[in-house]
Image (tube, rainbow, N blue to C red):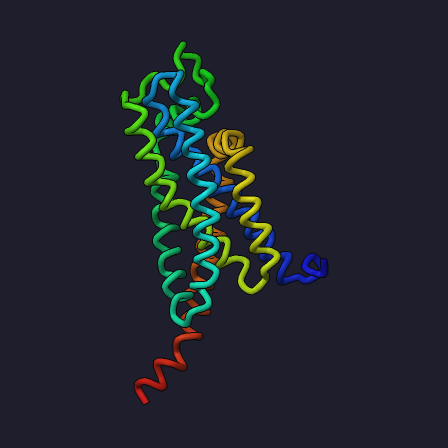
Length: 220
């Protein structure tokens, strides 16, 4: 396991862990927001659907993304896509405190603001509506997560595997805890956002360097 004795691989691993923590919490908040409008007896079903869908999608996207990033030009495209993810994540971090509280209450099934109701202010919806909303969001956020992890891991395949396994474990086991943590300490999410932004810019740079010789050959 000489992976842990390499400064580059250790740095990549730390980046991957930070990305996984922040995006797992972000994904959990989205699931919570969708489930918050459901009756209490259906909330757990919707959250379970969200976690299972996110897990399956992460595995599927991982198998595809790793191969795609090896194709010339797609690393650059992936970096540009990840920059858009950063913008989207920044906007999500500005979600109102009230909405985020509703999502966190739904996830933990607890009355955090002592108003005698759990996610009582959310707009009512059916289980089918919530499930569709969750799955659509999971598709986008699972791709975001896999792309960010693959970009941070670079050529360190063991780091990539650890990152993806950790991502799945966090979604399945600790998503609610992480969502609460990010709700209380917003600065953690901003640190994660900066790391993802660095990974995106690095992917754009490496992708441009990779593509440039091919552009020169075509022009020449």
